[in-house]
Image 1 (cartoon, rainbow, N blue to C red):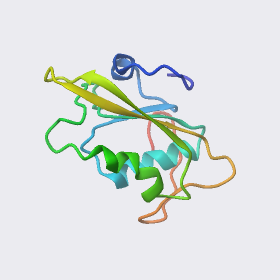
Image 2: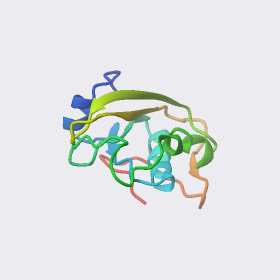
Image 3: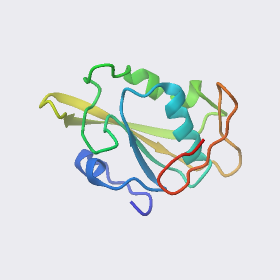
Image 4: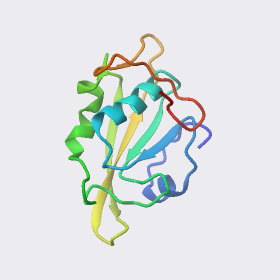
Length: 135
């Protein structure tokens, strides 16, 4: 995904290469880890972060063992980032890799050109670089 897209397709997200504007993460990640990616996208040009798809493209959703509650991800921008960046959320129904009805969470993170977004727990600032959000 060379630039932001409005396309919300789990199959597209599972096969698309991660990039400056797009990343996918397991629902097993904790909110502190997700806050790093939210901060990095907001401090760059914005982007999409999809929760419930593994780095290898496997659609695991939120029914996977040890998956966190979706509310942790919904609230990550408010509770784990300071100031809170602008994010639009969408839940997309999927059939996970076990053949079960499930869903993934799409975070459309807006760029924050007028303020620096930090992770609340340690005041760290991140910036998206190529296809990752380095420490």
